[in-house]
Length: 134
Image 1 (cartoon, rainbow, N blue to C red):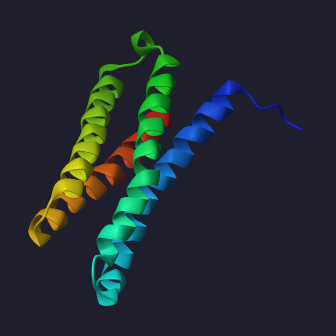
Image 2: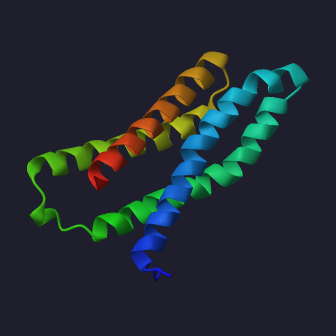
C-alpha cells in the first residue's frame, strides 16, 4: 500500500471541503423549488442547516488553501502562475462575500443575485485551483 503523507491529507481535506462548499450550493439551489412547494419557511430552514456545514467547509478551504500555498515556492513560479493565484484568491473571497450577503438578503432578487455570485465564484475558484495544480 502507498503511504499516506501530509500532502495527501492536505489535498484530501481541500477537495472534501470544496465538494461540500461548491456541490452543496448547487444541490441546495436545485432543491429550492421543491422546498418552496412545502410552504412556510422550508427553504430558510434548510438553508440555515446547510450553513452549519457550508461555513466550516469554507473555513477548511481557506485554511488548507493557505497550507497549499505554503507548500509552493512562488519564487520558482512565473508571472502567469502568480496572476492566476491572485485571481483565484479574489474569486474565493467573492464566493464567501456572495454567500454572506445571500444569507442576509431578504428579497428574492437579493437571494438570487448573491446566491448566483457565490455559486459562480465558487465554480471559478474550483477551475482556477485545477489550473494552478496542473
